[in-house]
Image 1 (cartoon, rainbow, N blue to C red):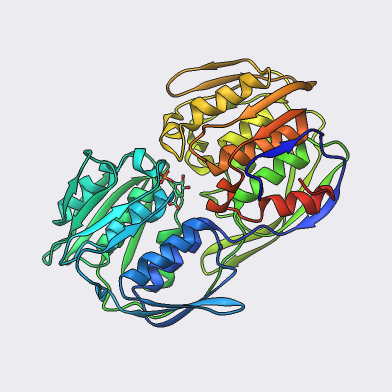
Image 2: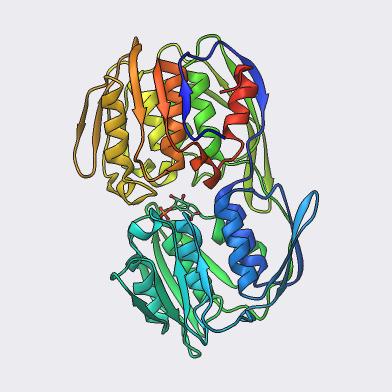
Amino acid sequence: MAKILVIKKKINSFKKEIEVSGDKSLSIRWVLLASQAIGKSRAYNLLMSEDVLAAIKAIRKLGIKVIARNSHYEIFGNGINSFKYKKGIIIDAKNSGTLGRLILGLLIKSPNKIKIIGDKSLSKRDFSRVTVPLKKFGAKFNYKVKNKLPLTILGSQTSKGINYIENKGSAQCKSSVMLAALNSSGTTYIKAKKSRNHSELLFKYLKVPIKIKKTKKYDFIEIKKPNKICAFNYNIPGDISSSAFFIVLTMLTKNSKLLIKNININPSRVGVITILKKMGAEIYLKNKRNYKGEKISNILIQSSKNLRGINCPSELNTSAIDEFLIIFIAAAKAKGISYFKDISELNQKESPRLNLGSKILNMMGVKTELTKNSIKIYGQPNLKITKQIIIKDYLKDHRIFMMSTIAALTCGGQWKIHDKDSINTSFPSFLKIVKNISGKSL
Ligand code: S3P
């Protein structure tokens, strides 16, 4: 497969029905929690991306049997604190912040040192956000470069519940602590700024002793060690973060309509829909249903004729954290100025997304005003790109690749987008779906 994607033409109108692959957050959580359950757990529609495969490889290294069947995956857990592994093992979290941070919580009692490594992008990211609370449980860490991968963790046999305040709105930090709490004596008390709550919903479903009190900005969570977790089956719904690229593609293409089926619309994940609707998008949730505590629906999108800029309320930031890059493309084509504030966390992702997002908009001829934690985007409803745009050196951030592809298909210009295989991180079938929608191979 050529590594550079070349796009020279905008997409034509379409009317289609698609499905996107399984939710990444739920897929990784299923793998990690099934490894702690007793007996055979099955997952259907598990996301087959590099991040999830890295999670499977990680638990295999920790002595857990995993079988890939034709229609599903099976994990044979031996219970909480039952990992069995050789001395000196290395776990490669590859590009996945979720895996790198969550697995550390599961290793809170590891009797031997375990080394965690990651790819170039993950090795630039901050791990103090999880090592600080995990040290309070009793774990010890060693690094080459402080707070960065590669690091080693040595667990504590006497790990005890902690008090923890999570102030960034990071579900990875919250979940890492929750997983450590599963394996620690006493009670863990977490005060967490609102963020995606898949771990909480799974804990409830698995009958882990968990209490949650919600206030407007924070959730107060109490967790006690369960006696055991029973094996569980899960049918992973489609990923709203992957859907977001096709939602914006449809909005920005004339006379088009798209139905995306079976998507997880957990309220802590749908900031993208709220934001785009506030900008005037026509997005409808159809056939809403509940599944094991999660909400699922089909999403119907129609072309948007009158998109307007938004002064985006910061309360929506965590529920749209992975979707800002594609929201920026919608803002580039909206009437008026859009303002997104308190989003410095975007620069802590697989690449510095706030800075790179702004740079790509500028390359497209869109004016931005960028600070360390905000961006103003001067929208141009009639934006038509005629020049060549080359996207490279972006730490292979899958979402930069997909954002650029959608910009090319909706705004014109001649694009050369490097590192096509970056999509394998979260959405390997992205280009196949583009082909299905456009009727053309890219
Ligand atoms: C995730 C949490 C978010 C998100 C990431 C997946 C998760 O990260 O960006 O893609 O599954 O918990 P933060 O917790 O760092 O915000």
